[in-house]
Image (tube, rainbow, N blue to C red; front, side, top):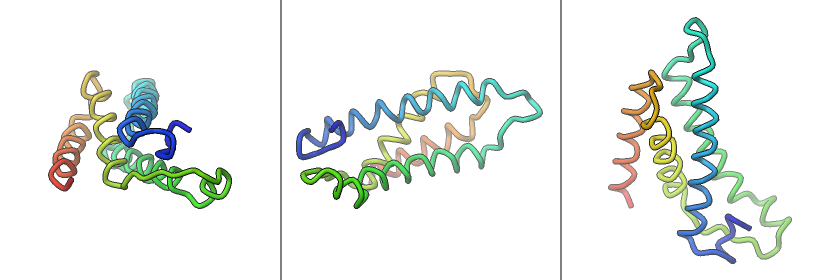
Amino acid sequence: MFFDTEHNSVDTVLGSLRGAFSETALKMWAYLRSLSASTRLSVNVVIGTIKKVVDIAFLILTSKWRKMRFEKYACEIRKAQVMATGYSAFLEVLGRRQTGYGEVIAWLKEETARLATTK
């Protein structure tokens, strides 16, 4: 219901999605912080994880299963909107905290800027 554009405006859906991504980013940050220096994840693994989370979120929101299970379900948001929302939520959470992942933050800034120009 929170992601259904039949019942909510696109802005409301994107706001709900941003909250979900922010919570996910916060949990990821807590996990990264708990790792010892010897088990620290590479920048590529962290970026790949963020990309995968955003891709899977879009697939779940627009899945045929969801549309079949809930007859009037509609999710009229584009993948670029989901990507921009997800990346900006991760950037906000990771940018506020000392993460040791400056390259990830730089990548997130590049991607959010790129997505902002393609709207």
